[in-house]
Length: 250
Image (cartoon, rainbow, N blue to C red):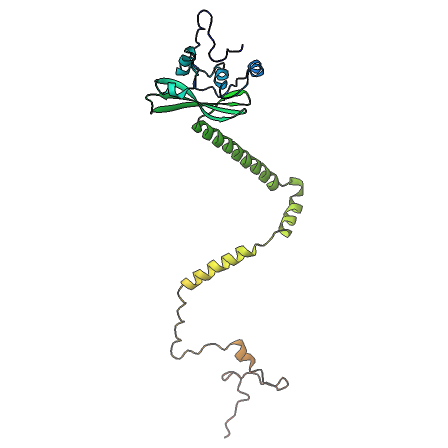
């Protein structure tokens, strides 16, 4: 049902105003194609189109101006009143109209409450900033959780080993093991730092008096300059092997 243009006079009693709309109406959209086909959507007629929607509060000051045959968006008249009102905040004819609902306490003091926008003839309630942040954060957390779930499922598939091919799979894994040289260098650097921090080992204690250290293998083999063909006499025990004993003559 189309509403009469501004300045029209109602015949009989005025229509019964409905209840004030709720604050959270972001889930609905209003569009009257019959009205859009009958009247142009511009800054002069947009408020009459907005008054047809369930977002409109019939107790606002704009409705009082309409009853007095005054343009409902006349800011010179609205500034003289107190209470709930709608103003046209931004206009991009004929596609976008932004209407703000606010509470006026004085000509200079107003408190914004809600914002509505008309996009190509469809009227929406703009969500509050906290609801926008909550929705974006919830969507981000959903995709993060989904990414972790996908990664965990892929890791389970990579770590799965068939029982029938345990030996072959272990051999192939051992053969395909890759050495990370960066990790080796990092460990060597850590060990070198620890070695520099340690104190040097103390010198060994001296040998006691009269003690001769055992001969080493190099000393037993002799110098390298010794001829190979030279015969070496076997070591002689000074007590056991002394040759034939000498007999005393009488």
